[in-house]
Each structure stands twice: as C-alpha cells, then as structure tokens.
Length: 279
Ligand SMILES: Nc1ncnc2c1ncn2[C@@H]1O[C@H](COP(=O)(O)OP(=O)(O)O)[C@@H](O)[C@H]1O
Ligand SMILES: [Mg+2]
Image (cartoon, rainbow, N blue to C red; front, top):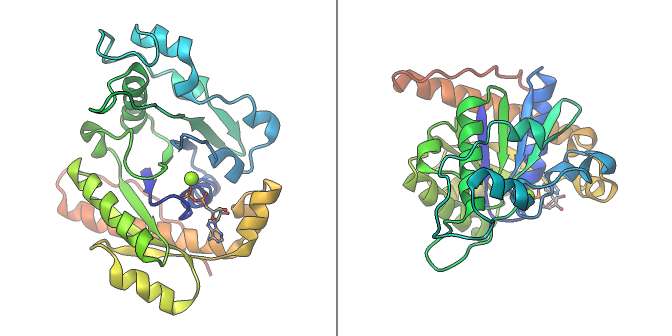
C-alpha cells in the first residue's frame, strides 16, 4: 500500500501522515514514512525521541554521498551525471525506526535556473522515490509538503492513492484543485479528498459541496489536543482517540474505493487489509 498526502501548507498533512502510520503499524504492517517537506516535521509529529531525531539527516543534505552516487557535486547541473544512481540501500541506511515506524527525510532540493531543476539532488531523490514506490513492499506513507514534487510520471502509477487534504476554507479548496490538476498531469488518477480541522456538519457540507470533483473519503475533526501534542512532542495518535477513530474510518473507506476501482481496472490488484471501522 502506497499512499501520498498532499494539500496546502498547514492543512494537517503531517498530522494525518502520523495517524496513518500508527494505524497501519497497529494492524501489524511495517511502515515506511517519508517526510518530503524541506523543513522536516514528521518525526516530531510521530513523537520520535529527540536523541533519535538528531541523528537523522535529510538525504538531500548529504552532499558527499550525493556526489559519490551521481558523479557530480551537489547543486551542479547541465554537466554529465548518472541518471540512474544507486539508491536501494538509502531507505535502510539513512532512516530511523521508532515503535515500528521507519522514518526517512528527503530534505529540500534548491531549484536553480528558470527551467526546473536538473541537479544531482533532484535526480537522486526522484530515483529514490521511484525505487521506494516500485520495490519496497511495506506500507509507504508519503508526506508531501504541498503537491506532487518528487513524483515522476513513471512512478505515479505505483501510488495506490493520493489523498488531498483540505480545510473548510476557499483557499484550501482552491489549492486542492491545483493539486488535482498537477496530479492528473502525471496521470495520477486515484485521487481522493479528506476534510481536515472540521467543526460541525456545516463545515463538512462546505467541503463536500466544493470538492473539486474528488470523492470525499471522510473528515478529521479539529482537536485542540493535537496542538498540545505539538508543544509536548507527543503524537496525535496517543492524544486524540477521536482522530484515531476518524483515521480508521478514512482507511476503511479508501479500502472500499480501491477495491471497487480494481474491479474496473484490469490487472491491478489491491492488497489492502481494511481496518475495522471504529466503534
Ligand atoms: N485535526 C487537527 N486539529 C487541530 N489542530 C490540528 C489538526 N491537524 C493539524 N493541526 C495543527 O495544524 C498545524 C499544521 O498541521 P500539519 O499537520 O503540520 O500541517 P501540514 O503538514 O499540512 O503543513 C499544526 O500546528 C497542527 O498541530
Ligand atoms: Mg507538513
């Protein structure tokens, strides 16, 4: 199972990624959580201890390593470098594991020039994300910081679902529309909407009525305990039974949607153990 999360900054992607990771771990699955935010924050949201986090370094920051693998100094582009650098050892070598969740931080790729980035870091990260999606057999939760960065067209089909998160605001839903378009450009079709930080049915309806044509899988309620957890470095999973129950419901809905879709898509198998809905 490979799930990518997208949405405007601050909607709750990282919080939801942490809830998903623990929910899958609870089901007995091994989980690889990928923090694709240039300012990594998933480790804190997962409640990783400081001493574990301080040893983690984002892949993009390992300049010598990138140079060694791609054959070019980081930040350089236009010159010759390996398009298929070796990446298979990266997830195990540069991640940290806590409570059954393996965490890998990608870090930031600085764009140079006007026409996109062809630098070594970008090539390495794309190859790495492709490798993870195509060859790793654990549950992968990808926390993107906005849209579908690091996801190439060739890899998009390996993502079982992309969940676009949106708060009950026009700005958040407009961002969801943009992300939907970018995702469709790379032929990522299994897109769903998840409403976040909702209070009451009016806000649920607001999101459902303005969804940019994406099926709404469910909602995550606004819960002040999440912010308390932010201050204390405690995972939302350990503080908010309501959000845990909602996350299970969303996964269950996703399992149903994917099973239905797989009936229509020849050759695609959906291996997904739906957790029992909360209650
Ligand atoms: N369901 C929620 N209820 C209350 N606060 C939330 C909820 N989800 C996220 N937050 C808070 O919103 C802020 C942004 O959340 P975060 O998960 O970091 O968003 P993103 O990764 O999309 O930028 C954080 O301070 C987080 O604690
Ligand atoms: Mg985030």
